[in-house]
Length: 262
Image (cartoon, rainbow, N blue to C red; front, side):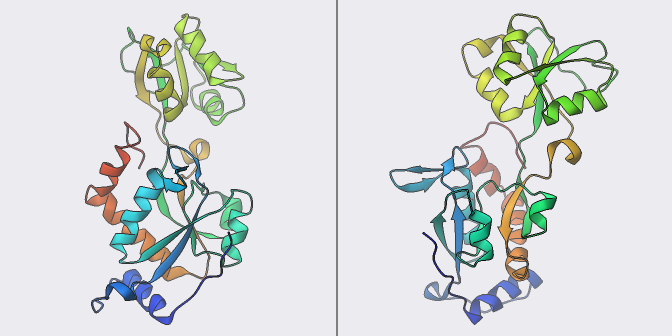
């Protein structure tokens, strides 16, 4: 599926205008710059194939970003293995496929500003009131989470007055919560939402969002770009900021997630 990228001089000029916020002449529809964007298509609800057509949160968001940039975006499906190598080899111009921002990846490629981060959260039985995620508020409480996860490290390092109980799977922690063997479960809010939507999950509800901490929760997910494509990076940054400010982002997000992921 790899395809060579056709670079045009007017595309660089259009990106430069986006990056510097300069006025630019009207662009005719046939002259819209083309951006080839790689998406895996195998990670629902973020991106997936349905009837050989890419669907999902990232697909819808990408279309909105391309509208803001007045660009024609061509979606290229690419398996996860080698997706960064394909970008570096100029098979496409960008990756928008739940690519997490990490220090290791930043040595090879550039990233836009983040466009999502799934928060960590805490659930408890429905007779439990909302609670602050602080050592004092959770002192003496049994908190279950997945063994060797960022959530376990968070509890151990920052909530030392509570009792950490680890499990091989989140489902096992949820079962202990259901049977009242622990007081809380901490985990990925998306995964916990799935449990709460189940028949067994009727026992419980969210009681807190865990304060964002990059040391434990990472830096989120962003568009991957080649380091030399600074104008394109700025274009994506500006477009992400605009759709988040004007409500477009939240309208798209609400189709897939019942909570904020900015």
